[in-house]
Length: 300
Image 1: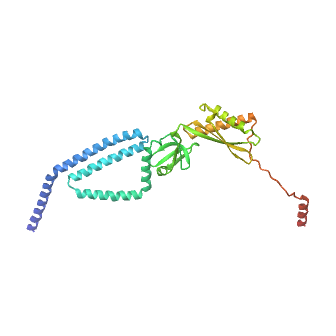
Image 2: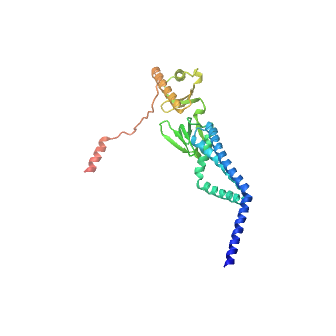
């Protein structure tokens, strides 16, 4: 029994001595690894604040700038961790971590495929100069002012003050019309006049009214006017002109002004804007008396 105890005690002492020797041997590497981790931590904080300042100058959304800064901080810390493990000669542990991170990343990517797609699309949209908060855009059947672009969705406020929330992925994959990229919009106005109207006078008067209604139109030559068809009750035309506008609301206001002024001018000049007329013709006259007699016989 005593010999077994001595043997166990001797093995324990040898084990402790080997651990101590290993600790002494790797103590410089261990201290260096701790220093690397500490430096990487403070470096990550500095880089995070620096990236947030740089990104906030180009992206107005605070959520996106903070997310990008956090991602950069995580990258720096992870790089410091890998360097520390390399200093400690824990290459197998490093390989295991990389393999585990790859498997975990694949699983998370499959589970959150839609969320990640919207997040990436939100970052891409935030860096696009042609899409900014305050722009008036039209996409996927909706038109309105861009009031927010975050990591999840794209928010529009329509002309009737309704809020439309669209996933970022949908915006990135579909065409988008940005009215705010240009300072001019073309207004198209369709109308019709009666068949008895003087068409030359209609053309001249319409172009003159449009020119006088908008100060930026210098000449009637800047107003396009085309007769388009012989309609069922009128001769129809198309009138087009440009207005200084960056919003669809301004375009609608200009079109409203044009309609009001054209109607006033037509009324003053005696030009008729006819409405559709339907004529009903009955070729067979109804015999009321015979119908009444048949009804009386059937009742008896």
